[in-house]
Image (tube, rainbow, N blue to C red; front, side, top):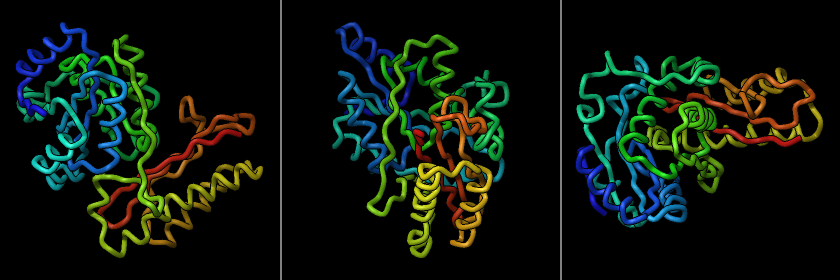
Length: 282
């Protein structure tokens, strides 16, 4: 695996691969890789000839008082994991490479309608930062396919919508949530959890599963189900962020006639903000 830090060099080497007829795949990450990230790399390997992974802790998607400075940077360990997973190129730029004119006057990409609800409501500007950096990475790498985890369901929707609206020639693939044996969704931020909190954390997924079971059994008072679940999570030690049963295609509140739903949730446990989701077919 070759590690590249400059846009010019990456374009040069990928240009040669493209002229050779190679299909190029991209796995964007912020580093501190875990098995869920490696799952994305394996999926990319299966769907492309050349796999490019990027590691960039994007300041534009962090809000005020969020964990930008504390976010773990583990480049050497990440390189070893990517090489073992048969990644071909690692793009690891610094901030100046991605934002040469600074962040204040940076052109930004906004995906209206789904960027300011749920996660976007509690983290204003977050999805604008995500859409902007992903659009930049698509312009730099020019991938044929890009792989994103389904753990952040709303983020995947934002990226799909942006790609469609801007007519970007990139196939967007989701990858199923990677979980620990106890059901906890794998996340770089799980490293913030204490031993005691790690024992509590799987309650988020088990609560989601319980809500889904109640819906599948015929319950349709979604607001009551949401409130009951959040109260149960608070009793377990979580601090609520959001817990919503939504129409799958636009993340708006469903009617009792809607059949394709998704339950998306986020909650704080100690210093960690955990997210999870589950699709529901009625």
